Image (cartoon, rainbow over all chains, first blue to last red; front, side, top):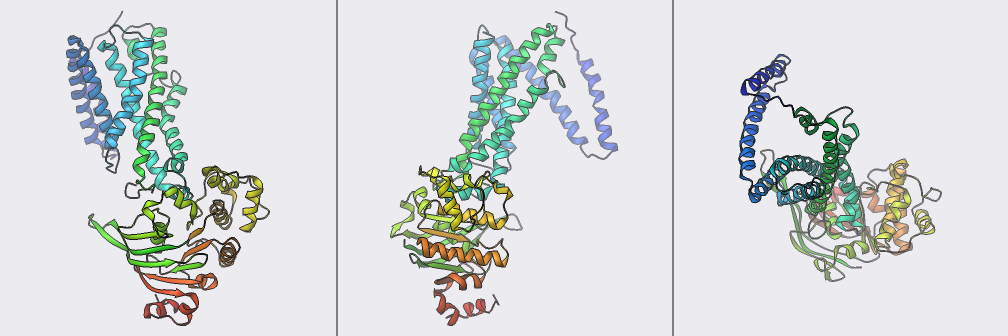
Length: 260
Length: 246
């Protein structure tokens, strides 16, 4: 396996390249120089920290530490998805975290235990990167689903109330909007399946190829990952919508206008 | 069906200019009894709490204080779906569901697992004055007036005992509005459906209502028969309203 390793001088060289977007932002007055700078520093710090944490975990080889790491990643994903919401809705964090964990969990178990048959199952060089990918997509899907449902509910409030006034249950009255939100949240993942390999070469596959893995082998990995990502996003979106829509109604089956 | 409102209060939290929440009084100490099988109009200027009162009766909102009784049974002890089957509501906007006319008309009967066929749908359309319209037409292809009539027909498909109408003529031109008011009268007389009509237009109430209640700034200022309201208004505010000065 042929692999070109990087030292800190190489990273420093890449850092100089960031001066170009900062310069452009300044020249055409985009006003985002500070954000680019903060992003640059955060990328470095966050990835260095995770690099050392991973090194530590890989060395530990104990299942509960690795599982704890996955749990922490799920909680952070849940927190990030909730943070994007303008309205503070009680209980939203647990709904989102459970949904993200459920969607990625099912996909991860299938991938690790049934497809890759990793021995032992908690082998960190498989479990951690796979969890990262699944959790990140599930997080984006869940956040998008809630955003869309909130937006649709505001825009189509009368439709929901008309259905309630006819005697529909909250679920029945909001059902068309739930479908709409699920479709919107799943579309980016489905679109990614449409263009993968044509417009874009995914990071994991590219990483494997750079790492010296034979292209056809890395492609097989990527295909499996794409299918698992779609599964993970779908389950997370459906689960988050199913658990979340109840927050939009009172116990008397009224649309809770204070939440919107 | 008797609807009794006793000492009902309703407030709403709104965000003030300084970003702080403040309480806005929507209804203050409302006491009224709506008779069965008649047309009762709730009149009042915009923002007087008329819509809020209708929403409370349909249980789309709950009062902060006070009681609402349906045939002497507290509204809280009636399951919302059962209540809403008996007390239908037509909103200011048609609020139709995406799809065809038939999809909209059959919504209620499907909910209650009642048989509903095209013949029944056509009969409802005839009642609302849409005799020759194709049931498979998409609701987006209809005029606002037609949509409002479909909205009526959709509520009638549930065979309600009371129909709450929230400014149903607001999006219509005067001629279409008059047609709709005649239709409301017909529904009341021929189908025996009690009507509670909310409007800010006095002439509409004058045309069809048996009883009138005037609501101003969340308080009932006058309540009685339509003829006494227009001939001998008891309060100065009612006189001002009739003169169009409110």
